[in-house]
Length: 187
Image (cartoon, rainbow, N blue to C red; front, side):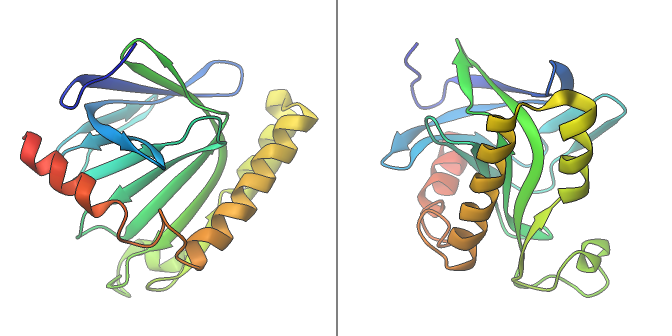
């Protein structure tokens, strides 16, 4: 199915073994050489079993074909500016994007992160971290990740860390800006 700018989409993330995880709705923005871009305006309702919240800022997500990740770039005003979920390669089922979350996250903290923000315990302003390594190790056993999935997830997290740290496009804090503008225009 071909998506057009402005088409409504849904994201359904699961954990390994088809365990429910995050679900939320957004809009298809378009595509470029990096992949397909999705938009999620401030106020988007995000839910998973046992937890829900409405997003505080606009965000755009990059979905790259055949990659072990889904990258989200936050608008100003949040504790992080880049949040990349390491996932099995995402797939489209009509207007639903599906991906299996493999625990690891590559996060760049906001440059203006307040030292009083609870997330400042994770890393300082502008720092890049790989989060949830303990969960990844635990789920390898409890969820039974296959060896090739473990290797691909680990390699993806390490490559993403370097790319975000070195500000390689699309993690240069510029590539996503036209897509945030497109999200604003579509609203």
